[in-house]
Length: 282
Image (cartoon, rainbow, N blue to C red; front, side, top):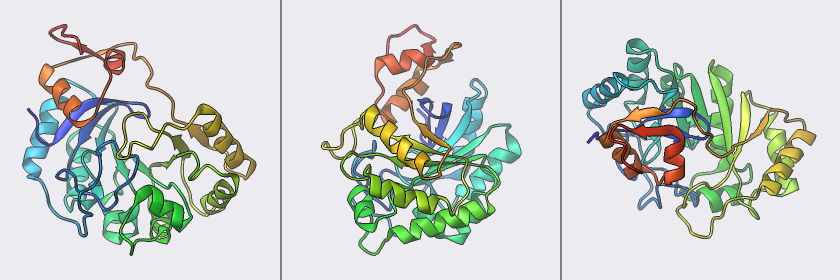
């Protein structure tokens, strides 16, 4: 069983994504109500080296012998920018493979100049911005009381100034919290101050940390998109369901089981992407 990587994972946004987890469960500086990894027992306060980097590199090399993912993605059981080894691993991947690199982040540490420097060679960064209102931000993301939305906004401005790759800005929509017209207009004004490839409206796909969080309706998502576009934000995309892959990937059972141990996937989702070498049902 692999210790530091999972998948390749069927992703609604990235196709086939080989996940790399550089932190220990669950290391995060937020306790987001929608998180698929569950609640954060204790908020992380500083960056650390959590893993044996050589082990991570060897596991990536092993999987790449049989599978070519669309992206090698830093995500997993917490916030990947908390790892002090993030930059080193990104550089190793770019120097030793032909893989595309994606970083999924809650954006909080993008305010750190060292983190900005470390992520420069990524091909795609998916940072989160769920609100520009501090009260709403705290209700959804639940950071420490000393953390404010201005820190994330500042980090996104820093990133968009220097990053040469693609930025897919993610907004997780929760009905009744961050889908109101006044709120979306306020977000649109901030978005005009930064550069990004597109904004993706996301909603709950699997069980989140809090059971009261429900998937936003397509009507709500379309309305949020409409408000953004009416206020000058053109590149708005609603994250859709996982699509069926024409050429399914043949996978070893240990990789499939490892992936399912990190995230909950339905049998239907699995069949859209993978075929088992043993013809075992998922």
